[in-house]
Length: 221
Ligand SMILES: [Fe+2]
Image 1: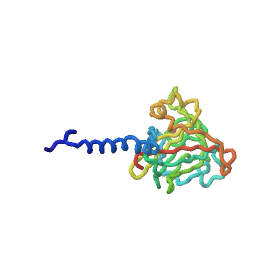
Image 2: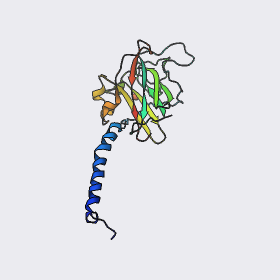
Image 3: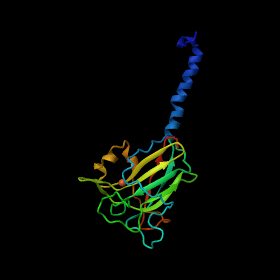
Image 4: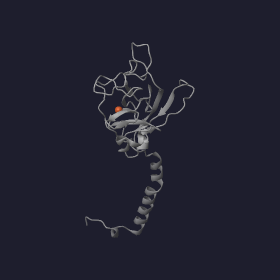
């Protein structure tokens, strides 16, 4: 009739199905497990998303028309944008914005009395290449007050837009004294995915700079 039960299948059909299920549950799942990534946790946009159009630059340490260089530890931040299958997300739009080395945003709503840096605007618009890679040079932002009795750990804001997905998140730094008490970082499941290491530079980079790797995983890309 219209409904099937196990009694409708022959012993041989069941044996074939069992073999197929065994393959499906053992072999491919091991392969899939090797490729399957975890989506990067989202974080709040925050109050300081830039009001002005973001400049298309991969060097935030200099402001066009000014001779000086931004104060602070130079960072070379790089990584890949991938989907859950580990495939590169090409031509993804990456917007970044951050505080300066004193913990101050250029945003007019930032009431932190820490000084502005005339050589640092703190935002940029990038795109990933054909392998999903991105790279930019910036300075390490400082922690800043998140309220009367709390400090936000140093972080860089990211908004990443692929063809199907958009992710708003923040990248933090290993060993920041405020990481453990920050409610936003600690609200993220798998928060370790948001905490990057500062590594010594390879010869192609400035000797006093640090390297920071931060891969970003979207659902589909
Ligand atoms: Fe922030």
